[in-house]
Image (spheres, one colour):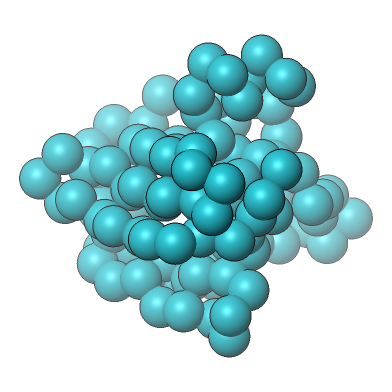
Length: 113
């Protein structure tokens, strides 16, 4: 699995975040999924719960449209990750490329988990 993106787009009207990967795969993430899977220590319940893979339960969480699920800004973190700034001010999660690829919600990627 190639974990380098070739393009990143946040569509605020559709509330979808899209990453095109170097291997041709395209991942489309609902904003609610990205927030439910926030990789920061606070959202994960402490440093002892930090893992390189997202928790499986994030795929079944329903997060309604609210300031906590609206992206305000996306900031590059070096060449290895993104930080998402949410409208509610939360901006602690660093979503590295491996984590985002593992978070892909498409049926093909979910079947491999």
